[in-house]
Amino acid sequence: MKPTTQQTQLDKIKADLLNGGRVDSVTAFSQHCITRLAAVIKRLRDSGWPIITERENSNGLAHYSLPEGWQPGTKKP
Image 1 (cartoon, rainbow, N blue to C red):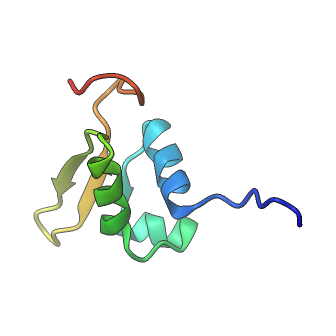
Image 2: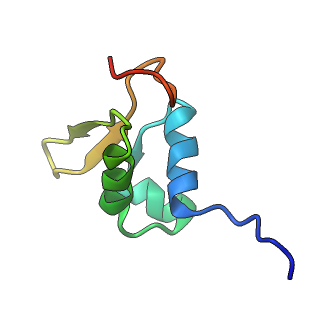
């Protein structure tokens, strides 16, 4: 049996955040077909990622990002 190299939803969101991007449910769906972004974000937070949430006042859409310069294995700022 051949091993799979398919990225998980968690891997895709990790990569987006580590590249300095902001992630929201609209872009997660359009780029990665992820429909439950909040669940992915919770899993990352539970494993120690210091994810920042910002909400748009007009529609309440949450944007997630990492503190500038943060990398896995470093302490929270």
